[in-house]
Amino acid sequence: MTELRTLRNYIDGEFRAAADGRTTEVVNPVTGQAYATAPLSGADDVDAAMAAAAAAFPGWRDTTPSDRQKALLRIADAIEARAAEIVAVESENTGKPIGLTTTEEIPPMVDQIRFFAGAARMLEGRSAGEYMEGMTSMVRREPVGVCAQVAPWNYPMMMAVWKFAPAIAAGNTVVLKPSDTTPASTVLLAEILGEHLPKGVFNVVCGDRDTGRLMVEHPVPAMASITGSVRAGMEVAGSAAKDLKRVHLELGGKAPVVVFEDVDIPRAVEDIAVAGFFNAGQDCTAATRVLVHESIHAEFTAALAKAAADTKTGRPDDEDVLYGPLNNARQLDQVSGFIERIPAHARIETGGHRVGEQGYFYAPTVVSGLRQDDEMIQREIFGPVITVQSFTDEEQAVTWANGVDYALASSVWTKDHARAMRMSKRLDFGCVWINTHIPLVAEMPHGGFKQSGYGKDLSGYGFEDYTRIKHVMTSLD
Image 1: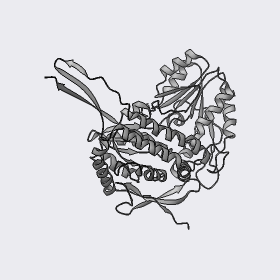
Image 2: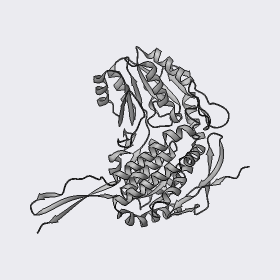
Image 3: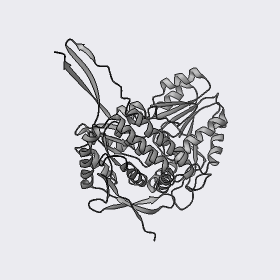
Image 4: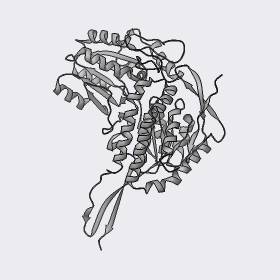
């Protein structure tokens, strides 16, 4: 047997095992075999990380925005320089294609860190002034304190960036927990950040749901931030309410893709297929719920099924694949379960099965004939499965698009500008794309409504979420 690699927590500038020595195995989803162990952290580990972050906070809070900017810029440069190493670790941990991960994740990550480096020096507020005779008022923007952050397994390294970059830029200190299935790239990022930040500013605690629960319930953090499932978000919100911590939640999605009769069908199909199957559909914003006007439904569905059948999944080193395996055995069971429970009135146009006997690969799948109240329409599948519904008019399209508990992202496909504007107003989602789906930029906010959570990632709005506002009034006498 190959000896398993050992991953460790990063606390107060040092790599260390869990205090009680417990570990959990980390599995390569391409093979289904363990390749590393990671700490299964408990209360002592969380206490140590929180103490380190709390001790580091006053010094980091009092650094100038310029100094924080310089540190983040050095981190961005280091990630760029070590891109091949980072991608190799991420690919082993997630099974993602090496080529696509290199081109589609590293550049945005680096750009996002550099954006928040600049944002550190651009906090805006009301001008100081006299709003009461004899008194001058001003507003201070301050960091909130220690931030407990929990990242997901679908984009481990990028979501770690979305967590730590705005928090650290604003002057906070961080305790970050990666998913128990994907800790490897976060531990590597800790090594990189540790070379450019004072000890205690950034800490990584590996572990499971209980570890995350201990972090959120801990008395030290002023804020808890999680990207994950609706269930996890509800638990975090409930736990944080006990001592009124701030909560930042980016949860599930069920993005409607509304396609009207005037679209260029081949182009729309090509773009939607990529947006639905990229990263094996393991994306809260994935284009997985397509609503097509009845006049083109048959043609569009046939074209989408062909595009799906032509989409390839496979090993990370295969340059022809769009996506790799599902992340873990539980996720494979979840996606398979949706297909096994498919109602009799629905039809699998293509796919609907596991690929190979090793690893967690699943075929690109298109399902038609579903009704609005069916499970596959209402619940997040989080896999390479695209559903197709047929609508009759704009009113029905809006009703069905909004008729789910999620409200993260959506898209409208039409050549009619007025219709696109009407739809963008009426769609109840945090993001509406028009004639595209899934692009994100650092300057624009990402976040949803309803059970997709609250708070924003990216943009100046995301940066402000990691600050608090203080009114200062002074007498002129």
